[in-house]
Amino acid sequence: MNNLLKRELGVFGAVMMGLGSIIGTGVFVSIGIAAGITGPSVLLSIAIAGLVAMCNAFSSAQLAASHPVSGGTYEYGYKYLHPSLGFSAGWMFLCAKSASAATAALGFSGYLLHACGLDPDLLVPIAAGTSIILTIVVLFGLKRSNTINTVIVCLTLLTLGAFVFAGMPTALEHSTKNLEPFWPDWQGESIKDFLYATALMFVAYTGYGRITTLGEEIQEPRRNIPRAIVCTLIISSLLYMAIGYVSIATVGSEALGLFTNSKAAPLEMVAVKFGIPGLHWLVAVGAMTAMLGVLLNLILGLSRVLLAMGRRSDMPKATSRLNKNQSTPTVSVVIIGTIVTGLVCIGSVKVAWSFSAFTVLVYYAITNLAALQLAKEDRIYPITCSWFGLIACLFLAFWINWEIWVAGLTLILFGILWQTIMRHLH
Image 1 (cartoon, one colour):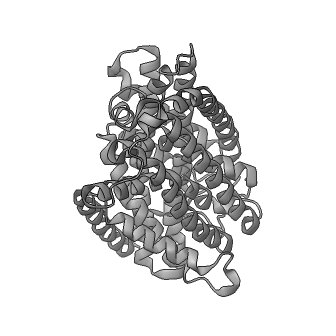
Image 2: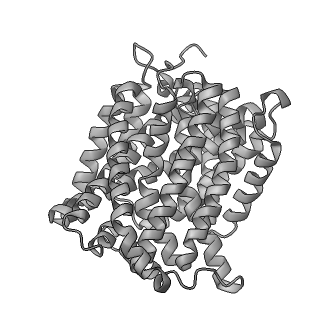
């Protein structure tokens, strides 16, 4: 490939990109949805999902280190498996994450309107305008995008740290009442709900994949990509556990689920219970910066996958063009920004998140399958990690609602038809 992007990102920048994708909708959406489904045992779901994510991360890190180009599992599927599997991974990533990006834009708009007491009818216009502005930011290149993302992540981390510190006394006071029953009833609907919640929490961790989709732009990829992924997951899993504990111990899992499914900001509503003046405003600001970080990182990651698909003629060739200084796939960024802006009218957050869970689990099943094909000299971690990740992804996908399965499989079939048409045209 002669149109490679510049390697401008170090290990710190890569970690910031990963955290920017993980600590947004995961903290402010997924924990609440999962808590509403399985109750206090969501804390156990968070831990198990983190373990599965770590095994998947090891597979992703090995693949990105041995084949450091833009595109993530789309490229790994092509190189190590079969073109149809590689295309399916890329196609599902584009569809699912475009919807996730639109959800993040709407989330930012919703938190802003709630905090300022503005007219709810402004939800879509503000979300669309936010999407356009961040698309323009990404067009200026990775270096500037990374600077803005680092500021966003630092503000969000400070906000969430203040939330945990301020809420811990209240959480400890009410934990006995609100954390019971902690263990799920290991039979019937209870175990189904627990595994479904674990699948939803797994999605929250997969923002580390943004590091692999930017693999072509990371310095010393064999050393920096694995380090960045592991650091990102350790920080995010500790944060998730702390946020989950404080939130559920304070208000209970049922209330947290209701807060998430309503228009109110869940952590902001929890913060009100702490009785500290102004804290809920600080949490609202953190929520808005988190959503901006997710949106920025998704536009970056999606444009790089579209770039990779354009190189292989699975998308129009124009999507593989770079700007003059080889720092940005301009056409791909504009297309992704346009799609996300058009999708801000997406419906139920819970349905969108469940659909993301199915597509992401399939995506990472393909990732692990590709990692199993690595030569021994290219393997950084034990092969058992890839086997565990593959089995866990397929197992958790089984517990997603059947309607989501039908929609996901239909999407794959439509994508294969698209690939056939594009191949015929070229």
